[in-house]
Length: 159
Image 1 (cartoon, rainbow, N blue to C red):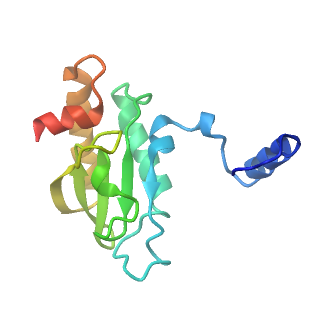
Image 2: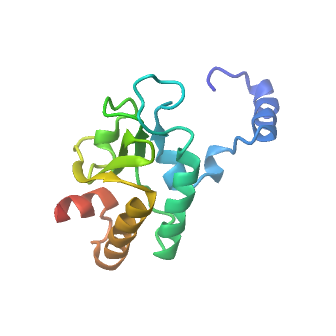
């Protein structure tokens, strides 16, 4: 929310908290970076969930990150309901592009700055498959990354 007078800031923050909107500083780096398009049921082009699925997906990915002591890593995640790419998935370190209900194409290896395109690594995968693939990549990243190397840079070298 922009252009808020200083004397109104606290009341707006309380209002947001009362409606379940956490302050940015309380969000994990993954949640701070995550983007989704509106997808189903709003967009007529959508073939899969995105915006409504994002909170559940980020929670599951955070669990994997925590298992590998990577919860504080800033990783860009984008999810869209169709290939049109309204949430700019093709630039993210991790991206899901909807193909059908519960089915996505998984893209990996973009950079956090949005200056390198990611690559399609798996087509028509469901959540369980996506989480297994990410878990393997997180394990390798935690074990073999170079100092200061981002997840996207690490994965891009593997692809």
